[in-house]
Length: 85
Image (cartoon, rainbow, N blue to C red):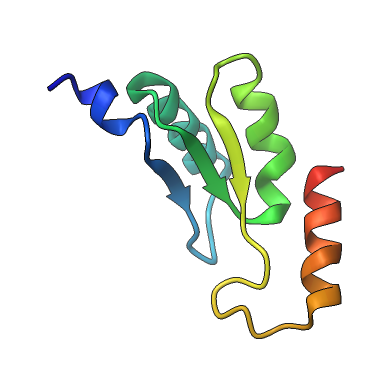
C-alpha cells in the first residue's frame, strides 16, 4: 500500500506543552509530504498552521479543554470560537 494512502485518514499532531516554530513548520511539511488528513495543534498555533497549510488540502485541527476536558463548556466554546477566528 502507498504510504500517503495509509496516512490520508490520520491526523498528524503536535500536542506537547512546549514546542518551537521549527517543529510546527516541520509538522506541516510532513503532513503535506505524506498527505495526512489534518495537522492537530494547540489553539495558539492554529493561525500559523493555517498559513503554512493554505491550499495544501491538509486540514487544520485543534483541541479544546486539552488534555482532560475538565473545563466548563463555556470555556471550550470560547476556545472553539477563538480557533475559528
